[in-house]
Amino acid sequence: MKVSTLGHALLGLLSAQPMTGYDLTAAFDQSLANVWSARHSQIYPELAKLVGAGLIEQTEAGPRGSKRYAATAAGEAEVRHWLQGRAPGDALRSERLLRVFFLWMLRPADAAAYLRAEAVRHREQVARYESVGNEIPVERHPADRWGRIALEAGIRYENTMAEWALWAADEIEGGGPVPVT
Amino acid sequence: MKVSTLGHALLGLLSAQPMTGYDLTAAFDQSLANVWSARHSQIYPELAKLVGAGLIEQTEAGPRGSKRYAATAAGEAEVRHWLQGRAPGDALRSERLLRVFFLWMLRPADAAAYLRAEAVRHREQVARYESVGNEIPVERHPADRWGRIALEAGIRYENTMAEWALWAADEIEGGGPVPVT
DNA sequence: GCCTCCATGTAATTGGTTACATGATTCT
DNA sequence: AGAATCATGTAACCAATTACATGGAGGC
Image (cartoon, rainbow over all chains, first blue to last red; front, side):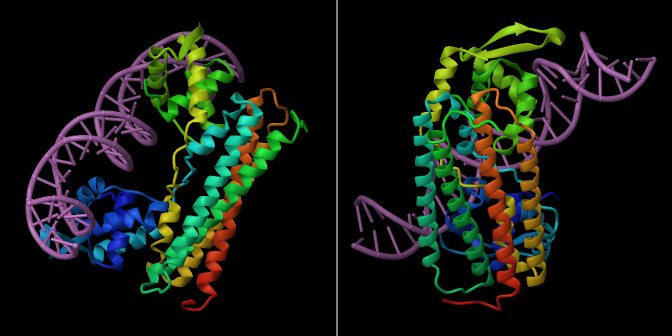
């Protein structure tokens, strides 16, 4: 059975604690949203597949027809195996960065304005991340610690991009036509 | 007519100079590969759609049945419009970063090893980017300059992630159990 | 009674990758 | 003659988003 990235993410979450599809959807909307996203319409069918593969099992049936799942031993083993296998190349796919390749089509002042607006957006994201970080004071589960570490990656990434955007804007607007060599 | 991101990328490339589908495929394999990727199987149908929408036109028929396209005035206008519209949120979707959330399932030493290996991979990518940068000495088209600027973003990004990964590894291995507060 | 949140599912469509398929030109 | 490269296309499949659809439980 081949398990998708979404499948591995669900298995990882369900290895920390049993959850319903609804809870999992919320997890993807909150902490996980910044590295991987998924809608409930993708999650529910994936849960059914994982049950079929014996990687998770339903542990409880609650009110409103809710179903709580937990990872089986096989499921946890699958996550560990995934974590130790080769990670993909993961070339970043960014429409925002793609646009940069075509900024020569705008007047330099407009291109610089675009970049400065980008810097602002990246800084705003830093602020959002930092407020997320402040709202999780206590660590209940070891997983929380890793959430913080991933958050730090996000903060550093956004700060780097903000700095880059300002540098690029100056490069274009201030720097004169073309500094060959 | 709604134009996809791929469509805009093709329009942008064809605004710089007329090219064949083969040439465009090569462009996506080289410089553009780091921000957006596309295979020929996606490019050829998209070109047909853009012709249908009047955004590009075939300017020349070469040997081996090759077809050269250029952006029309409407096509160039569409790119400029796209560049000035709102860029999407573009939350980074990274399987490599997703894994970090589940590293609590490994022994700390294994988790740290994973992160140090990540740092190495990011540094390797920096080296690759830098050699790409050295291989484009002269700027023929204004677009080349923007390619360099985008490349700089890639270099800064990879360096940031390498530093973060080393920091995280130390945090886990050296830092003791849990630094609450 | 009404609104909000909890809770689960399916269908349609788009975007993207992998695989299948073919053939012409150029270089050695 | 054979290999590499140029060149274009289609089909099948997978991943992901948006829209459709339904209903129960709890709070006001």
